[in-house]
Image (cartoon, rainbow, N blue to C red; front, side, top):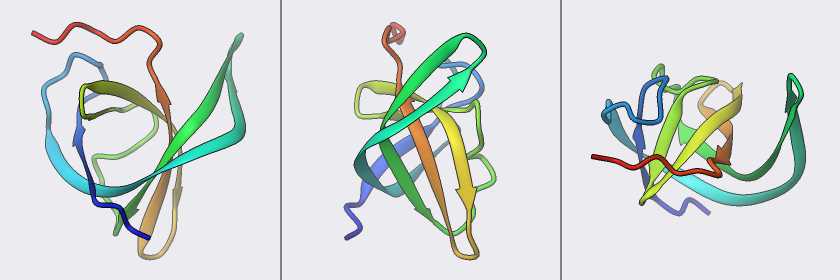
Length: 95
């Protein structure tokens, strides 16, 4: 069921200004860990986007409410995208 969560797409930096707001389906998720270099990131949420959004890609940041997440994995399908996101342990101070 689509839960209509509004996210802000930021740039390649968690302090970037919002480039666009879109509505996604946000779901809790567990069981996947992504390794990047010497670091492991546990995926706790994923987003589903209706259609293909060119501003959503790996290494981008998004904001949901007052929390910043990094996109670590994207799967594109014919008519939607799935993104695995990681909540930053240290939330940047937004000015």
